[in-house]
Image: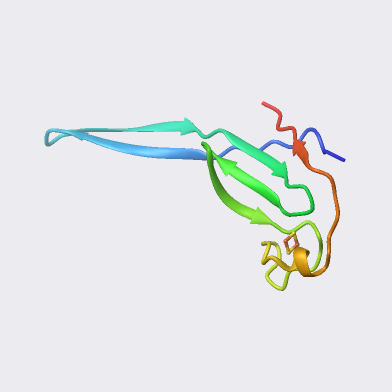
Length: 86
Ligand code: FES
């Protein structure tokens, strides 16, 4: 069952230098999506790229990360998307 109300903010910092004396930094909030794969881990996607996979079966030897043990454990769970609030 998807959870709601989770808030995740990841800032991406970019630095720019103009000439010798002028530089500035831009902070941009990344778009984060959390999806629970059918029969598999929670995938954390940042700006369209899968950043990591988090175990939700409880069998990983490398928690909190998925190590593929869900396949051997025959883990079964429906796909879901975690809603992230603004
Ligand atoms: S979800 Fe992959 S090891 Fe648990």
